[in-house]
Length: 267
Image 1 (cartoon, rainbow, N blue to C red):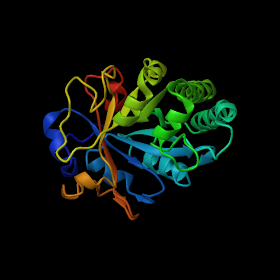
Image 2: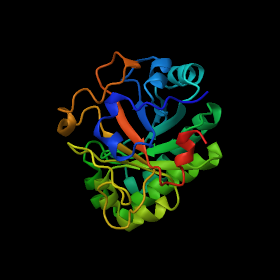
Image 3: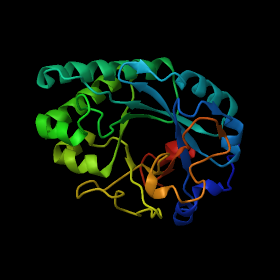
Image 4: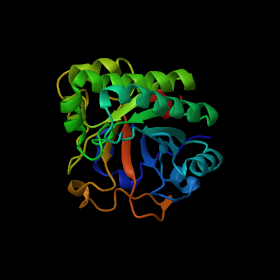
């Protein structure tokens, strides 16, 4: 089947910058009801489902995966795995084992439930902090090397179990705080950046909003379901194929210049 060529309206300004780019959504339990056929009809080319958080399975992952694979054959299905917080233990001793157990769980899920759109480690601001300090506080306490080692341990464990490469999702601020230590962990892994602007401008070469050294990207999440700065841009975070739930969809675009772009174009 040939995917639709019409760019959906909810993509708004970003589509004008890359008319040939493919756009996608990321979905979790907060979007409980989906219509795969409508998602495909709207021109969505990839959907990334939340699969795990720590060592827990997202309650909607299996049903969303089954529905998308059966009802939207032209849409690539990926998965993201949210790194979980630790809870006030001796971080220097706990982190390596914690990262390994979370990564192994994600890898086991990936192997047991195959998809065709890639897997991603999701690093949020408070993903690896205890109990509620922001990620930056954790980095200050841990040191950038130990934080980067945690990420490397997670990725190595997941990839060994799954038998495939995982990408990394993070914000420019996390990239800046992680510095060269985190950049070395990334190596040639796919990069998915979260960077929001009131009027999305898609950089043609540089990584959206990132510090020096982070000079490439594969996916860009340019609108978040709860980002206040972009709330006034019509209903761009809502797709007709995603019904119910309290949150709109996160919107993403794949970089046509990236080496992994063909994965999302269906090549």
